[in-house]
Amino acid sequence: MVYSVIGWIWETPYVSFNEKKYVNRGFLKGPYIPIYGYACLTIILSMSIFNSLEDSFFLIMIQIIFISIISAVWEYFTSLGLEIAFKTRWWDYSNRKFNLHGRVALDYTILFGIGGYLLWRFINPLFNSVYNNITPTYILVFILIFYTLFLIDSVYTFRDLLRLRNIIIRLNNLKISFAGKYDYIFEKAYSSIMEKDEGFVKALGDYKNSLRRELASIRNKGGNKLALSIENKAKQLNIVLLKSESVSRFFNKYPKAPSKSYSYLLSILRNGKN
Image (cartoon, rainbow, N blue to C red; front, side, top):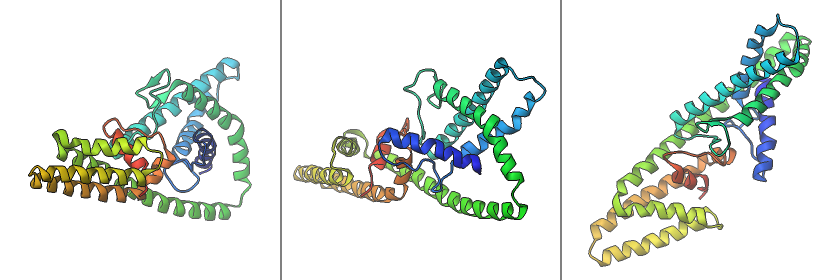
């Protein structure tokens, strides 16, 4: 629990500074990021293999490398699992040197290794001493309260992630159903949203006006059936976009979350707050 909170404290100011606005980092609504808790727990439990060795500069380097590897494994497979489950890669290091499939990067891995070493060597002993001096009853009450809130938070977050997955799949199916030259309807929605500073509502309004003119042109040429088909699919698109509001918080937390197959759809969702 403690290290999940520390992970949130570690990431939130860093991302907020880069984005120039407050970003409540992490999937969950509460101030904790579980991957940090699991990774730190793995590190603390596994570092016992060094207990029989004498301290030296060389040993410290080995320990930092060892912790870096543990962090990289957690980060890589968490990214992979989330992308498989929810069609989105929530962080991407593809633009950084020495990255592995964009899921981990050498500079961040080294940083996690150094930070993990400092936590294990200096901070964890302090937490242990505090923990050992707290009455067991208080610890039990605190754990029950924490995990009750954490479980509720996790259930609602998982529900929203499934909703996001379904929205992305529906958007992609709609795009496929347009087929051929009428695929421009999605592309126009994407480009107008990305290029305009007025925001999603203004961009979507312009897109709808443009679509109405296009439909009128198709009808004037005698294509009533085609125009009706496009109009129905456009209504479905609008419904899906309106439903995206409930999941937009994920893109606020991970503003650069990409998707190899659905990049323009994520751009629409990221800006979709109509």
